[in-house]
Amino acid sequence: SGAANIPAATPAHHQVDGIHGGSVLLPVFISLTQKVAKMEWRFQPQSGLAFVIAEFTNGKLEWPNPRDRFGQRLDMADEATLRIASLELGDRGVYTARVRLASAVVEEHTFSCRVYESVPEPQIHAQLGSKTAEGCNVTLKCLASGKEAFNISWRREDQLSFQEDESGWYQLSAKGPVLHLSWRPNSSDSTVTCLVSNPVDQKNVSLDLLSICPVDSGLGIYLWRKRSSRGAVPPTPPEEKKRSPELQYAELQKRRSPPKSNENQDPGPLSPCLAEVPVV
Image (cartoon, rainbow, N blue to C red; front, side, top):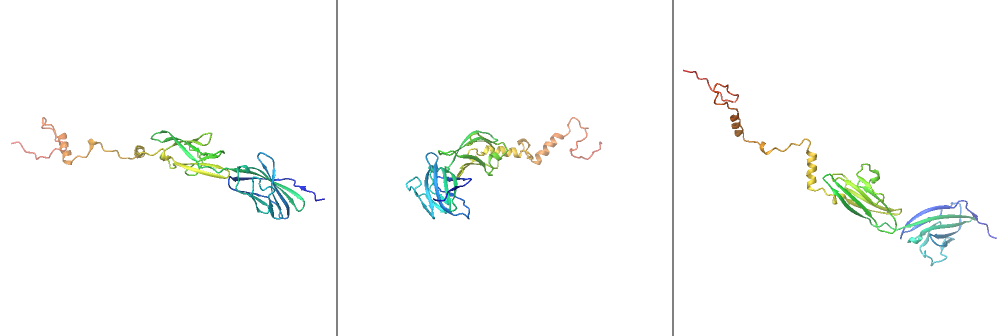
């Protein structure tokens, strides 16, 4: 009779993630002091029965059923690591490596494999709610087509997420893809980025808020006047424009000359000086 199989006390469990069309590695960690006699790989799909997909013995990988869903997509990256290439969404499930060591000990290592679609190129739809001299109220919606759910987040030009900003110039909707902004055109950061991701892929798209809330000439004049109100020299009214010295002197003489009806009145400070002539 053959040697008895001694099961391992605690099976090792691992989580691996892959992208549709890519590949994943399922490494079995075995002590260097142990020698593998045989390794059997089984697959438990999300629906259906489990089945053996490969056997590794004496340094050679064999496929019990070359016509199963994996075909020639399986190979050994090294003596303890199975590689699955050209991943399909149907490859999601649990993989179990049943390892029989030369010491007759049997170990089981399981891998939960998740396969994700690549993230599609996102788009930002912008809607201008209102525009005043102070700024704009804008609603942005980030859209990504696909059958799966993606994580959607928003970032500013300085790469900070809106959750890290406490200025209060934004409002995130409960659904995530929608962002409400109260933005001022004189703000230093005008670029908003939508980031769409899953555990294995991510893509982003950016929008310059100036493209939907431009700084027009009227707003520029308003801002200049507002900033120049302190210490600015007011424009000279038309009636106070500089006049010629001769005209000013003539008008002054006209206003300050003594009336003719009172000849004994003291001369004004601007009257001409005349020599006193004695009466004969």
